[in-house]
Figure (cartoon, one colour):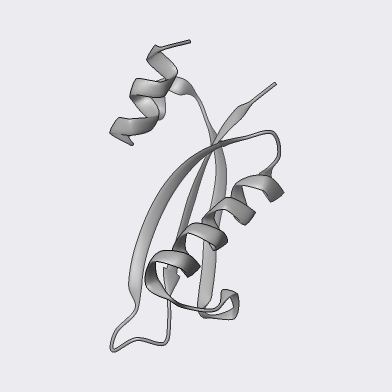
Length: 76
């Protein structure tokens, strides 16, 4: 069954750290982390070692704050 994960962390290496919170649908925590590394690395041109993850938490559909993910969930 597909779960929803919230990942909190920061990107180092720029002028000042960029704090982020991302939400992903994935089967496992590892898959959600891979999606996050891929997305942030691609958009901000940083290597994986520059991304520090502080928290990975499974959340319920009611806790989702990402508007795109909310719309996707409403379709099911």
